[in-house]
Image 1 (cartoon, one colour):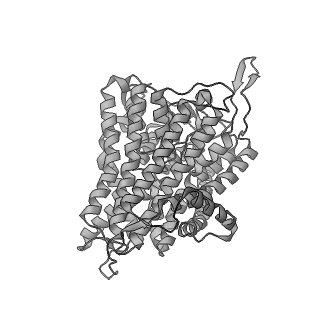
Image 2: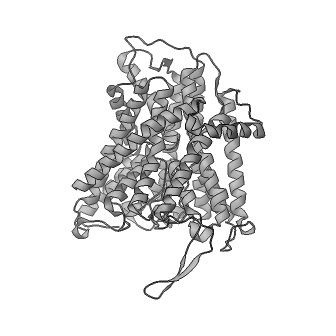
Image 3: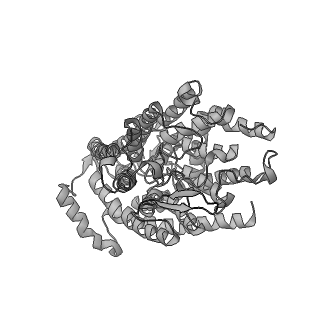
Length: 563
């Protein structure tokens, strides 16, 4: 790496963790209802919401009831968004007169934003009205992100409660995350982004003439407000078709840095919050350490692959698919960050990445985006790996596995395996069928291993609820819209089901005191084991498919073959 690249990345991580730790402590207080004074002025609004909605803030519910409330909440969000998209032609704030989306595309988009995937089979500036973008998509960005964050408290209550069938109150967890975390942060970030030149208006599109004398229609709209929550909530859905590569969404180096920081801020903070809530901050540190090591290693591989001299590249500098104002390093860092988180925004086209850089992006999503993961989603995905790691460690020390005083038994292991393997099966089955079927092959832009990577990326992005696009794959067909919509739905809620039910089971167990024989889960040894489990599970599950795709393309590229 060049010196400035190393310093940029180091500076990014310093800022990320310097903000992530105190913000994690803030989140922990919000989860507990101990609202800090600087945001206590919002508390009356919280009470008004409970009173207006008929929410009993003191009630605690079982795992099955908590899950039911979560599903009702998300079903209502899906239905509302689905109807908005279908009938946007009859709704206000539509200066361009866009008609409603067709049924399969509306179904796909509504599921996409409900599941925090934000997969976009449409281009925003030529498909959606301002009403659909603001009332539909931006609102759902808050709802889906708060759903993921609420699961953190489910895990905490499952581990803290003793012989108790309850694991919390979904409505309270969701309201607090929106009021005290997502809304204030998004408001501040949106104001800063407007100052950087991100547009925020309700004006009709502007007709302009380029220097070459060509007429051009410049899209307008309330972009900054959606960009803020798309990054902070690890949603990723862009206001414009090319997402954060668009100069109206991401105009300056500082806006690029802020958006990158926003993608990982809550994912990092939520792990520190977990440690604080468990009254053992080392628990959070051990998990964050594992995530940071994996992220750094994958970033080094991705950057090395991207800048290494390959015969088919002029001067060894691959700028295809990247913005000149952003450059190679910030594009690579973004590609690793957005796929490590369940974010899905892009500032370059991932199809133009070198094969091994594309492999890193694929691997991040295939592991369930647990490095660092999304708003809630990354942590509860990593929680499943923690359960597996504790089980393996228990076998190594020759005693029943325990995590924070709770025994991990067959029921928890089965659910953890379901939560990890079901999304993996969706990726492999979808890509396998697509590789031999016309409905997928006719949507690819390339042949050979790169074409396979396009199909793999599509199903990894949707099953993993990431939402980023590899580029070049046309997913806007009726069959793919329905198929990928179902894939996103299963990929989201099967994992949530597994985590909630594991937590409900743990809450009913008695606390087992820690002894000299207990395997510690707050040390670097546990971090190393956790890294090993993530890598081994990912390698065993996906290595054959990756070998046929990006790995094969890498070696063929070295021989001068392109696709």
